[in-house]
Length: 166
Image (cartoon, rainbow, N blue to C red; front, side):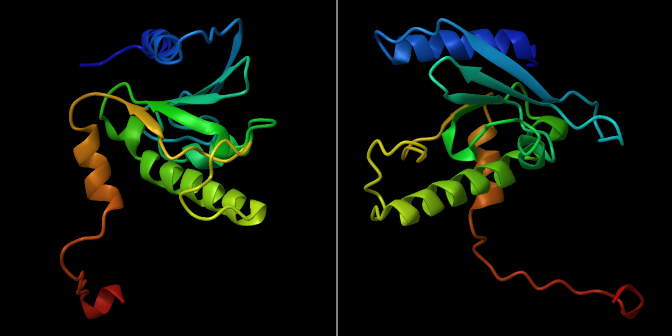
């Protein structure tokens, strides 16, 4: 089932306002970091939208291939402040950037924790450090996709190539 990105954004904001009782978002900004089709072009990246709330929290909507690179073009965005990601549907052009983006968020959180002297797992509310929970919203199958792409395989990979491919 395909949710239009604007509807997904509204649902995420509604859920977050219910999740954080007493916190309201007076304003937010939307930055389109990618709006291309099923493959990138020289002028457009794959789907990725960044919503920044009045409190400075970042919400990612969809994560097409190259999403973490596109974050470099967003002014004043610290990847460690990306705490919520919503995925509209499981087509590759909307999810293939998600595993790398998650790894980048974890790397940024680890670097922030190391530089602040925090021990692992005790990051508390240090500004700029990603909390222990990264909220992911999406259709059924998102968990399986992430598990398959982020977990170590249960076997050793042994690729074999013909001599002409070496």
